[in-house]
Image (cartoon, rainbow, N blue to C red; front, side, top):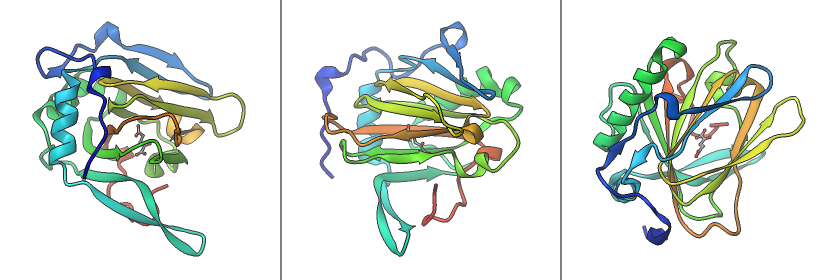
Length: 219
Ligand SMILES: O=C(O)CCC(=O)C(=O)O
């Protein structure tokens, strides 16, 4: 698989690991009890982590049913269930830092990791709320680390009205929390101007876990 990466745009340097959360996390309340947290630069030396994940994760393509046909899911995927070894030690470090920061508020720990590889701007994820979490009356969280090309992360209220588009960059952390999976939708839209590949790592607690979903209908 050949991927276009833009090392000149990557500003990371120093030790590979994760930075502090604490007061560096900025919370933005949304409507209906949803919120997002942002922590730019959470992963340090993020270009090395990108290269390691791009090269070693067993990425696979999935297909989904759409009306009367089966179509290719426009991104590559990998999933790590609770208890399964993560593909890089920095991801274990990130999950542990997230658990220290969020477990009291979340009421449980992040356990699983889903990985997406957007090979270029024609890969995307359509508007959705995570399948298990959106059907539940419980609030939950999804913590996403973004690596590689900056892509707009779009959010809009399910009930209509103004949404927002965040530019989530290399090494940044975004956490969707509260009622976000039930009351808001999110998407990574296709982008004609995106010049490189992007990897996202989504940490989920057991309650919001997407694992076990039928591959054909993820949304
Ligand atoms: O790639 C991302 O940042 C979002 C992925 C996502 O929404 C999902 O896998 O459900």
